[in-house]
Image 1 (cartoon, rainbow, N blue to C red):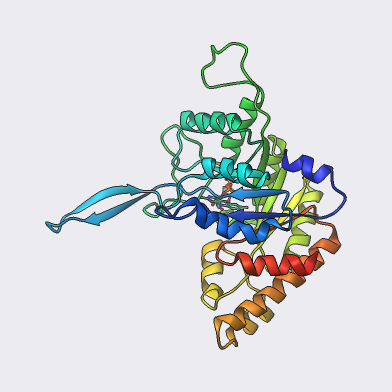
Image 2 (image 1 turned 180 degrees about the vertical axis):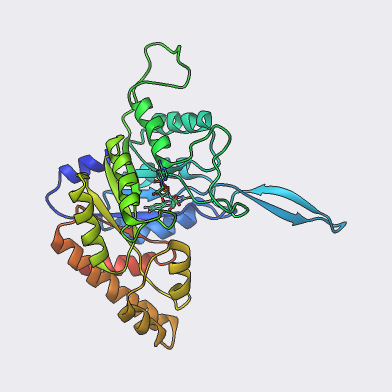
Length: 317
Ligand code: FAD
């Protein structure tokens, strides 16, 4: 079922989770152990992130270096199918521009369609580690909107081979990313919102936000979106804080602010267990307020601490 169908058929705030594919070398069981404690909350859908391959330089025995391609977390599409089979829950594979040519993208979408997956979250992806800024594959998509248009084309039965006859129309429900604190490359919020609106006008069915720790940022983002005619559901993305290291890692990696009250409380903790307690309380408080505001879905980034997220959702319901 589509994410938008879940939202339209419910008059209460839904729950969803995001997971990462296991690191290469780990089995699917590690992922099930991560998900098992979360499934009792009947999530409406589970998002599975996509991780592009990276080029690294590996030292050889003779001291020289060779360039090798590694992919740390493969398997997004098949993991989605496995989760659907095991838990009978809808899944949302993330699909990115980075590392994909348009033919590979089409094949990936065809596979997802064969697997009975109704949703995709389309993203640009970040620059590869060896790039100073995002570089598409030759002939690949530069922005998420270009990838989105390829998905809407397929939803209209338009494939890359123009002479195909009587083609099957896919019916993907399409999500896109939004940034309550602005995407870090955008020169200002207005420009970023204009680009977001372009994605919605091109066919995005809903938005999932980057994580934020101050609900006011989400509220004013929604207000600004509505003011420029973005009328699709805006799903807040939420993450627990659970270690002191995150005080620097989260702002650096995700270009977000941590509220002073939260950062000071975390900084004064003696152990990471104390940080977990603070993080859990903060996430619960955020969730209660967002639920009261009437958000369609609370979407939790579960990496690292599924039990912490489970505790929050248990207290919330
Ligand atoms: P876009 O919408 O393409 O925007 C990127 C930048 O370009 C923005 O600054 C925007 O303002 C600007 N822009 C857009 N259109 C134009 C245009 N026409 N002209 C000029 N500028 C333009 N990354 C992964 O690799 N895998 C994942 O699974 C993943 N999941 C994510 C899930 C969520 C909910 C979020 C919020 C992010 C996720 N990311 C993931 C990270 C994401 O790929 C990065 O934030 C990336 O830098 C931007 O992706 P986007 O889809 O927002 O890009």
